[in-house]
Amino acid sequence: MAQTYCVKCRAKTNSVSERLEITTAGRKKLIGTCVVCGTNKHSFVSKDGTIKVKTPAEEAIAREKKEKARNQKKALQLAKKIMADKK
Image (cartoon, rainbow, N blue to C red; front, side, top):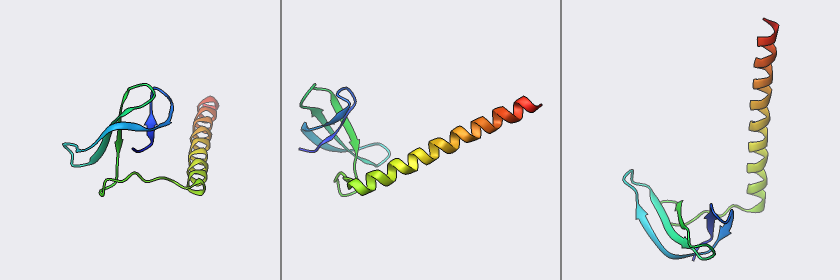
């Protein structure tokens, strides 16, 4: 049983009836059913069929990168708006 993200529960939950399938594009994905709500869950996995679990440090770095990208996007939008107002 692997913990994967359930869209309906909005949390990582355990899965039952897991099976590994290969997509038409050749990627591997893990398919299972959420034990909490019964929703079908799909998750792409690595070539050896395992799910990579990030350490807390890796998650913090990923959050920082996402926040930086979000702030850069907002700054660019604001700059475009200012430039458009000057014309």
